[in-house]
Amino acid sequence: MRMIALLLLLIPGLIAVFGIKLMRDSMFSDYYYILLNTGVQFFVGLVLFILGFFFIGGFIVYRDRKNKYRAIPDKEDQYTKTNEE
Image: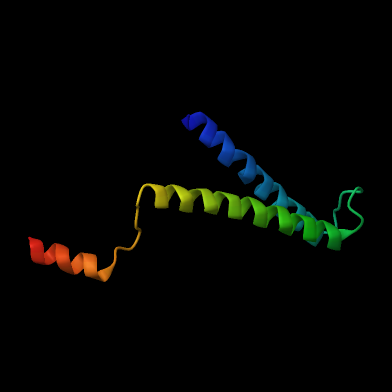
């Protein structure tokens, strides 16, 4: 099951990396012929990067909410824990 989750995160990660590559190549005027010009290539790269980034971020947020993980605990929780000890 963990291998499937790793593959599900690897594919959007590779899409985001390819988006970064498209944006970088368009900055140096090296474009793919299927994309009409460097402006279109930069926009396609930006969209691919944002989609990959949001998919990975959404997966992490979903997993943390499911496991009830809080990166920064509430101040009330800290106050009650110190008084209980």
